[in-house]
Figure 1 (cartoon, rainbow, N blue to C red):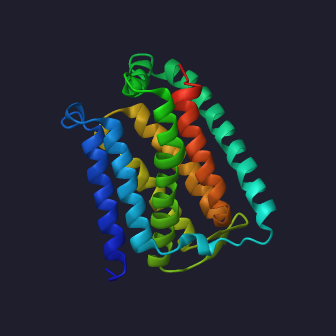
Figure 2 (cartoon, one colour):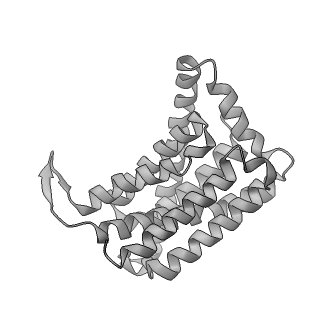
Length: 229
């Protein structure tokens, strides 16, 4: 293993440990979920800055004002589209898995009981949502691409290279960190979200700010503002 990959895989293991503590049935009942999630987000953000370098310098910004407006609008559009995908997915899951789908979704929404919607919205918008994208895309997916050998080839007009394989690996890891929740619906949600955001980052890494915005808005919308019930 390359020496430069050791901090990357070490931080991925830390993410596994943190998510297991927050979601597993053995530890979750003894913890304040939102305090742990906020602390975990800050820990992963710090790791991204310490070992990921200044990722914002990789963005190509030609006209700052136009770039900001484009990313805000694109981020809102992605969040709306993703909410729609989950609305459809919720209806399909209740039809395909009537015995457990609704109960598992309700258990996820139950996590917000007893907490201020305003406080949770602020945490999701300004800490948790952005932190996850900074860690999983700007750090993990980008560094996985640096670590993997570059052997590009063409497939259906797409370039399959180290960045593509890093995207697939990043989606898999992002999904697996939710494994010990033993909540099939949560794991599938992580798979879908990870695939969407990972694919978008692979397709256009310069639009990372839009992906960050979409994650933050989607988190707050699907969990607080417009829950899918």
